[in-house]
Image (cartoon, rainbow, N blue to C red):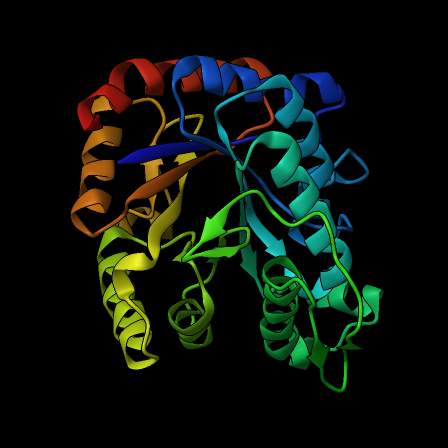
Length: 304
């Protein structure tokens, strides 16, 4: 089982060096990956938490971390694809993949923040088709020497696109696209289009059910389900044990109980999670560092 940890680009930490410093720490402690989140405006629940404090751009954060590290995988959990121009994002991701030595993985999703869609002028009711098309456009640009794409939104051909990513997926240049979400649409997208499935906030039992559905959808689309990476982002309560209505479904792990955390992670492993991303729910820099060290020392060795 592989272990990832979130980088707190979304917790309002005023010192950006403190944020990117968690990248080399994760590598030093033996984590397999680091992950960042994506929102463009502080609105809704994000504004309630941050007000006008910093929410750093995910790709810029990963770019800086890539220069400070040599091994750890660099991931997004998740990029809201309708917010991003897929050509510009394909260029950024391919460039970062080359500069980092082939370490990028993009968790991608459709988004759900209505005020943010409205502020950006993006139709919320088109978010699914926008996401599907963005995935297709990026793959075309990454994989083909003479990329072409023709639709009502995107119409290009007779051009060149470089750099291509360093990585290859099933024989074609590309950056892995792990599909976030657990809705029926997300499961279809993961099975038919994704290189992996990467939901968040689901219990181990829910993951097992979703995993089976994703694999069935992949097989029905003529794909090998074993090619899909099965990942999950699981929240860790940094200050105390899980509480409230979500605690009962075991979708959160206790940050103050390494044995309880290990038991929860074991349940996800049994459910088929190959790569677990631990989301440390705090902007307290000292507490994040402490949690990362405890997990690396007391929890991860049980799964190696």
